[in-house]
Image: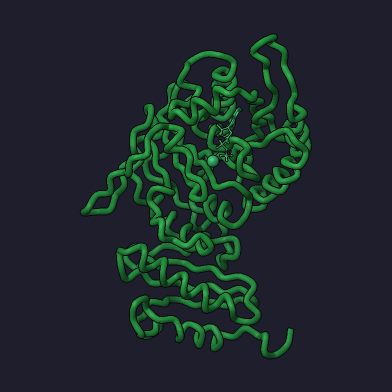
Length: 364
Ligand SMILES: Nc1ncnc2c1ncn2[C@@H]1O[C@H](COP(=O)(O)OP(=O)(O)O)[C@@H](O)[C@H]1O
Ligand SMILES: [Mg+2]
């Protein structure tokens, strides 16, 4: 690294000096909008002090800071944190976070006994379909269940559950009341985040906003909260799973080998932050032809079983390809609401397995 590539506190502060409070010519440093600035080798962490309730303003400042610091030579990663002075707490340990204890930020969610995250290495494998049907199957097994759509890049849970109204946010304490959807308590992050948020900076800023939302949602006496994570196994997913103690992650995949390589990466990533993967769900496993009742392995069934074996994980379910899964999802009435049939049975079995494993793995 050459001398001019060296990252110093001075170069970071000089860059921040040029960042102005949105709509003004005043530097963010002048009005104490910036809290702690930490530099560790080539990693920078900047705290934005919450001086306003307005999430848009905080987000806008975050964008400007990210722009200014992102172009500095020698910066490998930038973590932006929002410092809520009103409620002092440990800084979240993001994937590039500086906290030596990655679990310091894991705070139990009020009103929730157990959190199950549904993850996938890629989009389009049926993660949301599995999340909503698993949630409904857990409810059918007698539990009180909530569902959190954390997939801000493609929020589909509200559509699948036929409930896209905004949740109520109390004027006095900002508490958010989940929507009722087929007996589930439901919140979609996508509905709470302003659309003006530029997608490219969504990562760090949005997930600090998510942390705020998570604390503000008033779940009522849930046995299970099922979280539909964003697809992929990168920083955003890590940040999210580091917000709360999880009973475990359910990994959804399709049987093809290409999907499985990504699943392996995902399993290793969750393990690296001590999040337990409960098992694998192979979706779109096989197709039962309605004309002759024969089973066809369209994508080559069995990939899920192979990856499960490789990591000594249980294969929790094999869900068939069934046009009714798509149609019912599009219509806002997921297939489990039918209350019978082979797909219903496989989701009910999945719920039982998840329940058994989650109880064994209850975090302190
Ligand atoms: N087992 C299945 N059989 C038929 N269609 C499915 C199945 N699983 C998911 N789908 C459909 O595939 C599409 C993608 O599923 P979705 O759950 O939205 O995936 P993801 O959340 O992983 O992006 C949706 O149209 C959904 O209805
Ligand atoms: Mg989805």
